[in-house]
Length: 231
Length: 117
Image (cartoon, each protein chain N blue to C red):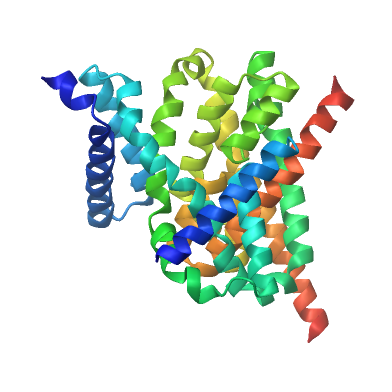
């Protein structure tokens, strides 16, 4: 009977919504950013699937309906960007400089630290595009000889980390301007970070959305180039 | 609401088409964001047409990442083999990127602001 229930697309949809609602409730009660609903939901659903031996393929029959909405959501980021275009255009120089510096920092520190700590070559290369949105990161990883299966979870974990402590970390180190904080979290933690910034401040969310695209572009061109020079 | 959703999906469709046709490393949804921005700037699309759909989607954007996260974590075993270098590099690097990006943008924007005054 169990497998008949879980094989329905409705199972994945209902499970995702229920777990997410529960995670939101928990987050509102405890108000600690570490329990950010995306990260908690992912962890709880994985634990449930493992505990009840439900195949991930069964879950994804419904999950892909929810995942489908991610596409139009990314397109939708154009509207906050348009609404705040004057402020953002006035800061175009600083924004470009910030993304460029952030993209370089990400590549160098992610692969550099992994290499210093004795990671294998595959891991070092798979970590390089960690701050870029998943589809771009996977494309880059393939190009430079990383493992997409390794890059994908690393990218998601990076996003969750940025969503959990991005706004708090920015405040702690004195990044007070909403545009700068949005750019920082969007550059470091792509879409998952952007979703959190949209909840914090509209301008931050708009700039974070812009940062996903800019960092994706910069890294997609920069990383294969750096790889050619150093290999 | 329906008109907004139709516009968003059309823009994504064009984006996916461009991405596939020219074999670009940029995903269709990100290209769609650029296309929609152009359509808004040129006045072809009025903000009010898409406002309702945009607000609904963006209010729940975090939810849409959950299935992607679950799907990707199937590969978690691969990470666990070298979990220490991966987690240390991932955490330190993420904080470094936020600090560098945010401070550079903030400092340059502040300097520019003083010039204008």
